[in-house]
Image 1: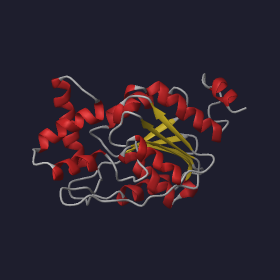
Image 2 (image 1 turned 90 degrees about the vertical axis):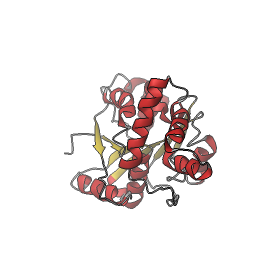
Image 3 (image 1 turned 60 degrees about the vertical axis):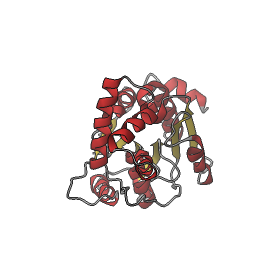
Length: 252
């Protein structure tokens, strides 16, 4: 297991993980990336604690810490795991994760449902525009169906009755936080709130466009920033990669 991967990407949204694929394909061209998936069953309580425990079981016998990364709920799980088991994590990379980790698209959805007396379908259609920008009607229909599934499958504890909050705070290992300037869910103020917990070695990077799923629309730009961050804290990570020369000179 020690040589099987260097980076572990966490996914907790089976209906939305297709939007991680372009970035993972780009990263896999330069580094060994494994994908860990969590899918909540209908009989489980909505909580990320079970996912964190299962992730620990998976990494328990790994003989070295790994680079953890994830988008949205996957990133929130990575953050919680890194805070509880820092000895297992070499670095942490979060995409579209606010300093208040529970501030995700589902919190936005339920807040809209509480605020306005409109149907689930209309709120989801509005959410599609927030997450992806304006899309053709047939694409919007497919995205509404995907978000509808994610409401059932994601381990988020939000509901029509209550919005939950998670503990704020940083981590002991190097951390990178990525977001988009056009993301209305994890907007720039929510992203910059991370500065309250940043260490000197931590990094915040914002994609100019791309909405909430900026890594889907701009996988190379996002990937280059992440690879540069990883190599800064793990100089031998990209040896032999076509990117290694350009990234190494940036920090010489």
